[in-house]
Length: 216
Image 1 (cartoon, one colour):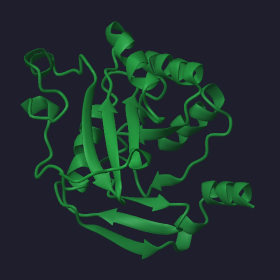
Image 2 (spheres, rainbow, N blue to C red):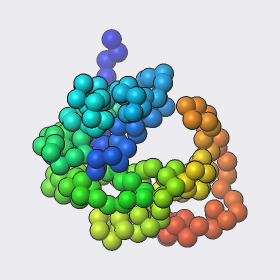
Image 3 (tube, helix red, strand yellow):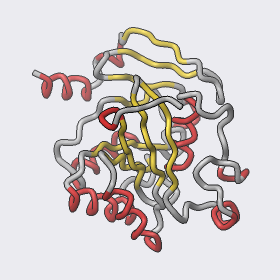
Image 4 (tube, helix red, strand yellow):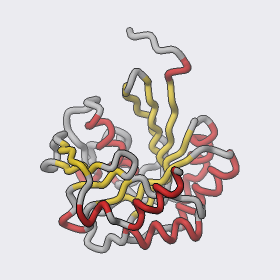
């Protein structure tokens, strides 16, 4: 068995409102890291983290589930926490033992009750955190509106580091503002990602200027 020193272990919690896509996100992460060989679906009852009979039947996370992967010589423990208020105790206990939190928010619906509840616990524990605006492939996706609402309601210093090239059914890639590159994804279920330099209208996106001004 491979020995991993404690300094190379990270605990990351996925938190947010129920239905924001935390479980599906964890599947994608595990698949990308080659820890699993297929992406499970909540509708099919075959995801890694929602495995109990009640979770499969109700198609929701009822308790926190821990998964792990290796990335850049680190062991990363990902904890998928439930999003419904009935299980807020699990969210608190999960965040208590984590190094950082990832707040998952639906692009169309934006900030919801479970979002605020998770953010309050993150603040209570003074945890480092980041936000993923999820489900940008939804026809109702409003990525930049949701981002502005995040700055207004959650943290005025929230800064975009990636944003979708396009939203809705045409979503197939993101702009990385840090590296100034465009990453285009292959077909669903493929690990293929194409990297290209940022040019044209995307390079003139106001959010890129905003981040660059903060970096100076």
